[in-house]
Amino acid sequence: MLFSVAEQTWWLIAAAVTVMFMIMLLALPPEPDEVPEAVRARFEQLRRTGKWAAYLGAPVLYAVVGLIALLRPEPAALILFLYSVVIGSIPIALLPVRRRMYRVYFAHLQDPGGRVTVDRLSAVWVYSILTLAVLVSTVLVMVATYEPRSL
Image (cartoon, rainbow, N blue to C red; front, side, top):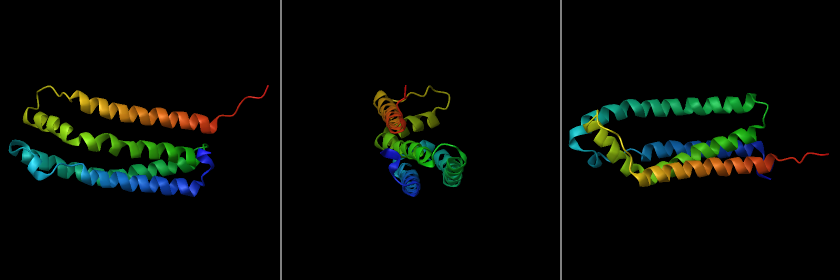
């Protein structure tokens, strides 16, 4: 039932998830007033280089995934479904805890030699969402592609 949707629809879903992910890249960085004064110049320098790498690298990555979907013997719908789950779960995992994670990142920029520790709530949230996405997508693929053996 899951993969009875037309392959063209899966391409549209993957494109929509990709657009959502790119919008998330715009929403993820902190506001300028959230950045401590001591690390503002360093953060802006890192942000400029990382921003262009993300904006130029992400479409190339998505094009590679699309080519793999066309070249592999598996149905493209299966690969596009897994791609959509992965790319769609990242914003859900990161956006709610982004401020907490930036606090840790700013502390690391102020003390580069110090130990980086993420608070437990952020770690549990990110790990839980990503693990849940993997488990649910695995079960859905198994159920959708299951064929009982004939004796």
